Image (cartoon, rainbow over all chains, first blue to last red; front, top):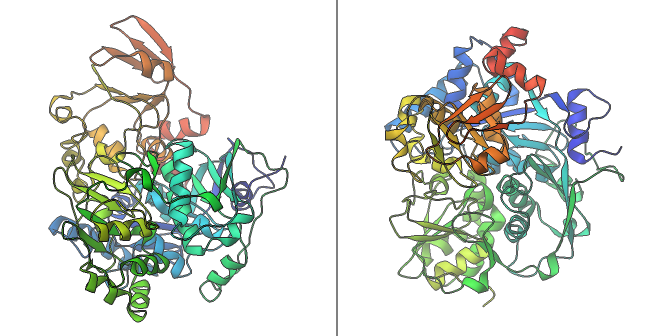
Length: 418
Length: 161
């Protein structure tokens, strides 16, 4: 029986000829990731278990990105614990304030993720690296501790949903609209325990930043991972970043899928997810005019250079509406610098947006833009659960950078094509 | 052992909101557990109580703080038709029992007295007298639970220093 991309990667990492959906395997890990919230819990478990050595100091990444630059004393204590562990074990890929960025934008940029690799991260959006043809998935702190100690992790081999992309995205439509549309179709548990495998001629037209955004939110459909085939754009992206051998896996022609979804990119419209679940999707024109108080442009989902360019393109020469606070957060230092060079920061600041150093900040209601009772945001982040960005009676509408930027200018939910 | 009942897609942001993740002490987490959907939960929950919920329990963030917060409240187990996969892993890895059983999750009501037998997977609603059979864990996962969690099982196998 044929295997999916994910199954082939897992078979290789488990040292097996082939694997089948449902099989329990133990796979060798190429990278183990944690952040400032999850790493301290992993360290405590690692030390409580009596482990004294990490399996490979070059294959662990610790990124202090969630509450940083530290928002309060308690988060500073967490960062201190992670920092001391990183120094004690001589962790090569430790990223502190000044070098760090939002982890899932940072790691690919630093060449730490490559096609065919197996990556676990104590952060649910670790599935982002599927954009590069890697198997990557979110796990918890105890799994991170086990991964750091052994370089191994157990997996139940997933079955898959095939998502065939046709055509080409139209102006003001991007990867965020693709993934929100998909989650709207299959639901927040539509891919539970499964891989989402992207295929079709439409893939070639998607930029790498679009693909990162799409893979990033596979978890919002319950998916174990969301993976793209490796093509010229992938190779161009990793060229100069990844300097180790890697292997691109293709799904077998007779690979078995639980179901198949076809998305026509030509006719896809700007899409938003209404409170309080990412599956509550609507075409933006259906909800245009809804009053808002805040716009957030950033995060591991949409804080990359393409996102900054799209937002600046819409905001150039315009002003953020007086009833709206707009926060723009480039996801990494490299993106920040590039945005400065291109004059995008000037556009944001002249428009009256607040521009922040990289942080996850408002996405999880951490800092840099918590909301009060009754407030509503349009946000390029990934979750709109109850209380996610602040008060339990605040609301989040998930959207693309184009919709977010247009909404910031209009002062209400707005269609960027209008 | 009374039951607390919740709907579908209970996410980890409501199980333990991110504003409380800056203190991972289990007791501190327990004091805020479920507060964004049930302000009474943390103050009324007692040792041995059970949470029954709809599908996709624990969706969202990978925060292990979520099963840890529920466990630290004294909750004996969570019964649901399905669990989000990271929550499922985390619960097993920290040795917190979860049971997949759609019929029990649907029929058991808030306030019912319920007992569970982890060895057999039998759930008994003592209020109604009905019994239910939860899906058994695969042997490999049962081994992790029997060892007292993932790290203990790894130590027993001698695969790390």
